[in-house]
Image 1 (cartoon, each protein chain N blue to C red):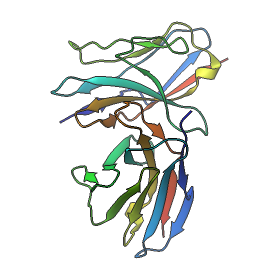
Image 2: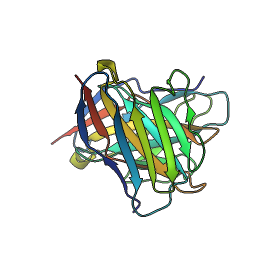
Image 3: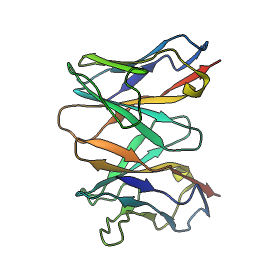
Image 4: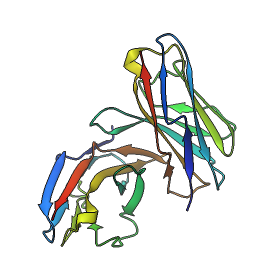
Length: 115
Length: 108
């Protein structure tokens, strides 16, 4: 089946620094990737949708200058949390979809801790 | 605005008992509903979608537009069904909105 990887799986960074999270589709071409944020004991919150080669579409309330998303190739999307603060600490999950297929495949998630 | 509600955070049943995980949604357009499952230490994966009208691992879910519900059911729960279950709504633009999840615990 389709596999999506994320790197790193865990990252700890200091407040004020930036951190990049990678999402890769390993065996298919991901024309669309989604980034979610999951708060403890809460739902996955859609942050943004990215289509290969175009700018990401952010959900209401998500700061595009804070969460930079790049989808430069059909197998890679990156989420950069800029000038991270402790409140950005969370579990970030990406998913990827091929073409117009409805099914999305999820990555294992990245645990970000900002100290 | 679209919204997905799963009222139960935790549902505990004994093996062999029936299970119903509730999901209600709010969406002005034509809804497309899904159930995703996350087993311990695994990633989210699709369980079933309402359009398929299929039974997966003994689970079924019927979309009730009148009640705006998409409850997940299984007549006889198994221990291996223990997992987190998320109801999800797909809206225009192929975006998914998830409920807060229900943890199903099937006791031996």
